[in-house]
Length: 94
Image 1 (cartoon, rainbow, N blue to C red):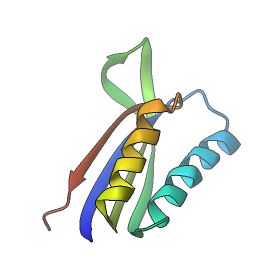
Image 2 (cartoon, rainbow, N blue to C red; image 1 turned 180 degrees about the vertical axis):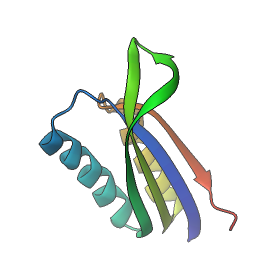
Image 3 (cartoon, helix red, strand yellow; image 1 turned 90 degrees about the horizontal axis):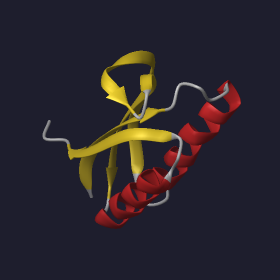
C-alpha cells in the first residue's frame, strides 16, 4: 500500500447535511481497502478562477494509504459526482 493525498472541491451551494454526506461517502470509499491518516475540511474558499460560473468551493484534503484498486474506484466516483467541482489525487512522497 502506498501513501496518497487527495484534494477535492465541493460545490458551495450544498446544505450542511448534504456536504457531510458527500464527505462521508468518499471516506467510506477510501476506508474500503485503505486507511485514512489525516482528514481536513478546509472550508469555503474563493477559487482561483471561475468554474462553470461557480466562484467559491468547499475544500477537503485527505491523506491516506491505499491500494491501486481503491484509487481507481475513488477516481471513478469523483469523476461522476455532481457535487465535486475539481479533484486531484497525488502520491505522497513525504
